[in-house]
Length: 267
Length: 255
Image (cartoon, rainbow over all chains, first blue to last red; front, side):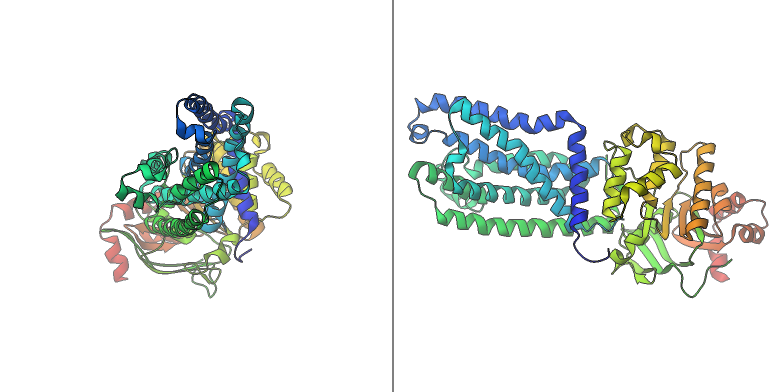
């Protein structure tokens, strides 16, 4: 009981978040809703641009693939932050951290819940694109798995950093949880090549794993080439950011214990 | 009746908490022996909840030491946490989850074997069986207090910390909770430390009272000893005397 990591405690926290999700069908529906709406919107846009844009005409589905993969990043970050916010909204931290639950076990449960939310959100939208627009993102093959994983991990890192800010500043920083991924979207070059950005901004963009992923995705779709350089760069950056996110989160958690915020934090 | 024994369940030494310029807890020392029901008694801002939070590990002290069950709480809190628990009307359980779901989640966090049976037993003891499947947020204050107590007793703690356990309850429910706590302590041999400013509660439940004022323990003893020492009729009068007296700290220090 007093030993280290316990999968049972991670499972308990996961169960807690699944109970919340199950308790409200509008919440579960909301997970599907935005992904599907985005996909439908960009599906029609793609159909229009197929006949009006040589860029899109070169690879049918490039915009749809981009929107679906972008959603992986966005939902992954949001998944970590929303589950975290659940504890603040319910003022539950004071109970959680008098149990043997370790902060890192909590973090693992937040990440696992994020994966579940991404799956619920993105997979149906990807499947729906097949009958609606005759485009299957699964035709990307194995690279899809790489892109998915890289974006998922980047979302986790962002989510942990947002959670650290929430631990520091309380619910006053809640809007960051919803907005931070959008702030990074222009630099991630989701719908256009990085080369479109001003030269100096391209260096900034390439500090994000997402920019490498979307460049890599376009290379697969346009040139049928899996760019190992982008893959490795994204992987190294992901590793750096997820470690940074974990360290910042645990530091913020300790700060919250120093300030007594675990008992007070909430609505 | 006094609490300085060789192996106290709680041993606190020079415990201090400072928030910026504010000294919330000022070099407090105390022991609580096994099987006792002790109270931290004081007005608002006296440092009761801050002290409890440090004992629970939710708040890091600025200085001092806490030993619980002989373990250094600041270094080895995870050796101790499975044997203790906490209940407070000011710290909610998730409202969206049903009572049963909350108890299942917390039961699993404590790694309790035969959890279903444990929940059923507690539900019967605490009379919460009829609303086990009701969302916690839809319960009345009294029902919520009993559920919080069920959460606090899930792991049959050998040390139970309570922050104002009967705050905002009607007298009948408050009395019911106090009776239950007395029974639990007697049957389990558990140690209970509660923070309160409810004099009747403290007088009834506690064998040892630590009077807090401005972050310091300014006096301690059994309720009867305190009443006699100050020549008062009730613990409430003692409390009011201490709360309003600026000299008491100096008097105690001089003693």
